[in-house]
Image 1 (cartoon, chains in turn brown, orange):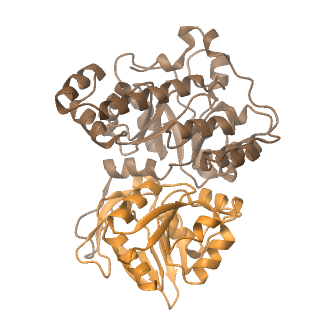
Image 2 (image 1 turned 45 degrees about the vertical axis):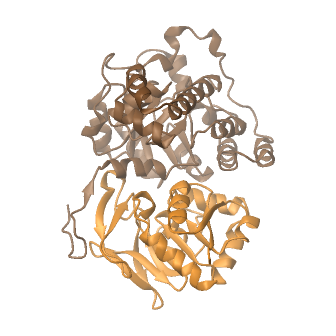
Image 3 (image 1 turned 30 degrees about the vertical axis):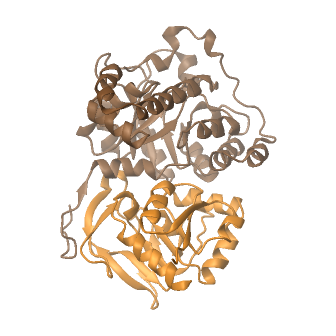
Length: 304
Length: 195
């Protein structure tokens, strides 16, 4: 660390909760896009993405290929870091804290401890307080979100069902989280202890959520957004921004669709803008009906 | 009472935190996304966020020119982080096609303090504010050089991190994330002085 001039009364501190959570605050109202190479990363940046998620295969392809999905090749991640000036995120497996250590050493701006990759530990998630790099984690309900925050996550995304192009699970999980928060708002102090027990989350966090009426960290939505209207839907339901995975680069005209989703995310409450953004986008990704998806292939079930 | 109406450019970024800070500093705060909303405010905050995204959306939705005109005509403005970049007359290393609103005669360097792992908190002494301000620097820019009309309000580690030129104020750091509303109060006073 460099020396502190006399004008600064305290020495600079990195990796604080405020700096980690504050980073996510800067992404609000934006779209974070999955990219698999430098060229896609540039397309995403030019379209107005606030960040990119660097990974070897988008979830739709992970689904198709099967097998074990792991952290991406460091070369590929570094290439993407070198190609764009917006923040770069990358995924580690759940509980694979060594993959997370590697990602931190590469200088990624956010680590996604992600159910899209094959979990490395079926009991424990990574201790995210141990890192300078902030983490985002998925959640299907409030208890899961608060457990991740207790482990140090600085941002939460509702999980949805990645790689399906079907927004139904994203809606289910975001509604679940929002409904549970609304319910807490109505509880008195006596009820919050039982609520914490039921949510299997620390009492202090439950109390904080009850007071704030929101999570103490930024909440995005993920897993199934494929159209501008999908993105606007998640925003209207209360997501502060969206992750779009396979939906962009598995579509007919990625550059155009990416820009359209960005527009609809900012003007999520203006149907005219969403209509204009939805015109002539070419083919959307084909998509999967989530009812026909076997339990074992539901990524949202991973993590606990 | 003389309560100014201050907008927060709400294309992307930490809009909510600025709205809260402005309200705490006794202004009427409202989000601004359209030219007609811009016409109704006495001052404007450009929030933290991604400067490339904000620049792109401002152009797409017809805010770039109206905003440049109003800032040039003396609209009080305050930018934090990405907002500081948007108020710079020149960016040292812009992405292709990245434009700014301008308003402050300075050259800025984006992400100058480094990537997220280098993001930090430190006390900052700001001219015109008593006692140190908690500076939250997130992938923060710094000001590389300023013109003769620009007042340097704060430095960190030898780099310029807060400036003022006439009715335009900018900081590399994010007072809106701290609950300390003194910088916002300074800006609200600037807006009040113009009414």
